[in-house]
Image (cartoon, rainbow, N blue to C red; front, top):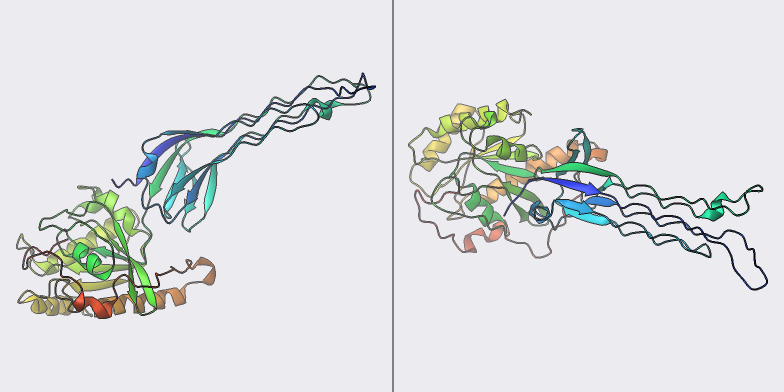
Length: 370
């Protein structure tokens, strides 16, 4: 189950109470105050963890409370601090205070964290209240209450490149050929209902590629699950626009391209200004190259042609994405550059080996969708 929105109640632990105690030793019948301080309550912390791929792990429990600090004791022994509660979420998660609406933190990098409910400080023991006029203080600190609030978590997928296009255009099949990702592939539209991420490698270089659910006309206005899908495009550097040459509804592929571009432009945060690589899929079909030429003439720029079934053109797509990402990263200020992705030593699927990879169980021409 993929979950990219969740609301939680979080509460930090209360601080432990300070102790009221007096020294009692042999030959010292009236020792001074020696009450220890209470321990601090635990905090609730949200941390970005690359091993978490969505927010499903937080749906089974909606109330998260840290434990209270222990009370102090005699001989100035402080109570133990309570352990923090750590909630692990994927990078790209935005945490908001639900009641106030303000953003507490946008966790974009691995290991980044935010305290969403701070634990209360432990109370002071009675030895802190000793004075020249109060030699036997019986005052103590009760310990502070831990913070509490309702928070909302929203995941927006972080990827270097994102696959966009109409349903059944072949996006999922492409991702499955370029990486070890295993999105569901079937010969009908809307097979992909949530984003899938894969690491694509070429030699020593690589990038994170996201297969995003197919868009339809009216997505920017919320038709279908348009807003749910489009917000995952917000964090991608490059858009790989996949155009199906012969849609099952006999629509014009050039018109379909412009429809998707309009939805990107009409979204709350206009996305049509993102660098874009246009590709025509299913090159194994007769006439697909003519559709590519028609679209290239319409746009006045390069349009790539590939087949995820035969492997034709896949190296060209990967190489073009890498070249564009290299240009964009070089132009970014160093302080805003993302940390480099660590790629596995044994590449998932290298582009030079595409033609030797098992062909997905999809029957062309119309069943190679994704």
